[in-house]
Length: 174
Image 1: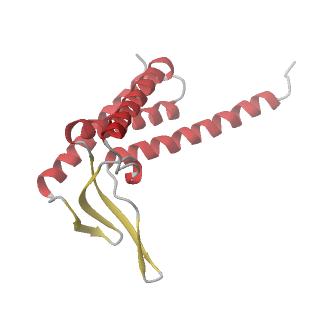
Image 2: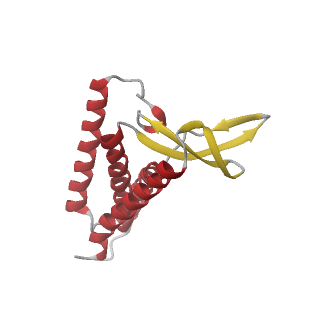
């Protein structure tokens, strides 16, 4: 098996291990409270909050049926990404890395949902501007990996289209 084929799987495992380890540290050392913060740098602190929704707490107020549907959608996404990796992981390094990041992050957050019914978030980022504090919703390693993976997929797709266009516009060498 080539490195390109192993890359997404190794990436997913690294992300999953980092995600579980950091969430374990949060559970062990930070009390659950949206009001408790450990300031690391200006604009960056650690918190311990529970997110029962998806990204940015969307759908957090849903009932039991919405939770079941959410789990089913996430599990289906994980299976589809794994299937794509089995079929296409050797195509391009950027795509393989992106899918590995997304898969590792999705599995990390799915494990939280299965164990607790919510996801542990602990990174809090904010900026003070115009005398007001503007906060980003709290997130975790898995969320970061999913976001970076999605951005890499967009970049990979845009650069692939550019290469295809250059190839089709190149004059024939006959």
